[in-house]
Amino acid sequence: MSLPGRFITLEGGEAAGKSTQIARLAERLRRQGRSVLELREPGGTPLGEKIRHLLKHDPDGRGMSAETELLLMNASRAELVRSRILPALRSGHVVLCDRFYDSTVAYQGHGRGLDLAAVQSVIQLAVGGLRPDRTLWLDVAPEIARTRLAGRKAALATSEPSDRFDEEQEAFFARVAHGFRESFHADPDRWRQVDAGGTLDGVEEAVWSAVSDLFAEA
Ligand code: TMP
Image (tube, rainbow, N blue to C red; front, side, top):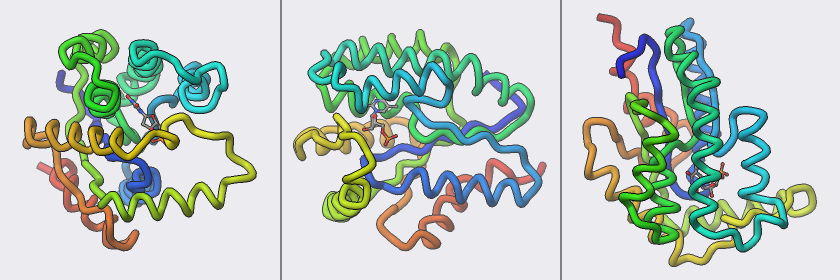
């Protein structure tokens, strides 16, 4: 599917700094005069944000089956693709998405242990032929992620409802990281690995180097 816009996704485990880096990349592109849409998954539409709440915070979501989780992630995605991503790409905008289908492969496939072919077919139904032009893997050492996550939890302790994913055990996140690594190696044309353990400015430059060719004028 070739569309006039550019579609870039950021992937990685918890506390990799994806949302901060998306905001910085969006700002840089806007300064260049481009129209940029920032989205996140699950979420990004009114319906998707309700599904996000069910998936992450709602007490009724506790203990949901892995299959339910897979389908809810992709219900949110089907809506986001049709109501926001495709129209923006058709209009020539840049779309930056905090997570996309590679998170489903990593979390529901490798993390939860669902059959990878079944996961792929649900994703296919949700996105049709849409594929990111570039996917960045913001890779951060588990010790750094743990420290950042602990700081974030402490800062939000009083205001933020608990998050089902943040409560997962280390072995789950190790399987997720393995999942990202496999996807990265399987499709080197689309993926770039970014060391997300450095300073915000340093990571911003690495992110820019990993996408700037998409904006080189012909
Ligand atoms: P985040 O926006 O803070 O990263 O939270 C989203 C959570 O949802 C995160 O723990 C990863 C998880 N997730 C999946 O398990 N599968 C998916 O397909 C997506 C998009 C996210």
